[in-house]
Figure 1 (cartoon, rainbow, N blue to C red):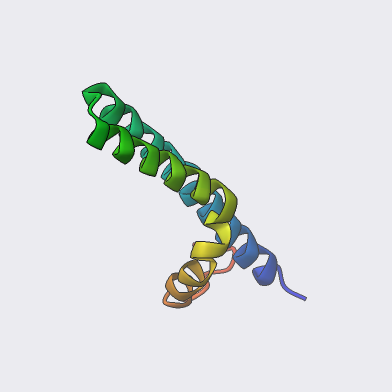
Figure 2: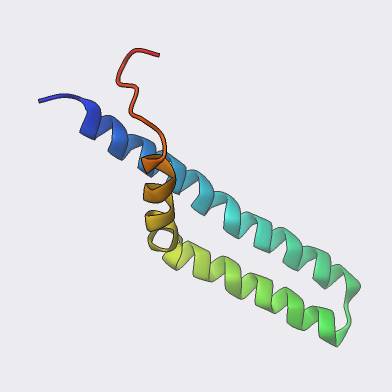
Length: 82
């Protein structure tokens, strides 16, 4: 038994966690920018960004799981040696 499956799973989870923690933050930042304009249209845009952030928090990992697998499949495993 090799460590490669563990390493592959670990890499997948690290990428998933990194992307899924940044995406909602970006939507929240954009919502704050729209809120600063303070017109009805931009309040709607701000709410849409907050909704997107909530959606990412709830469903982000499952949204990008297949994409991460596709990207990682393009790279040959290196094992422990660099």
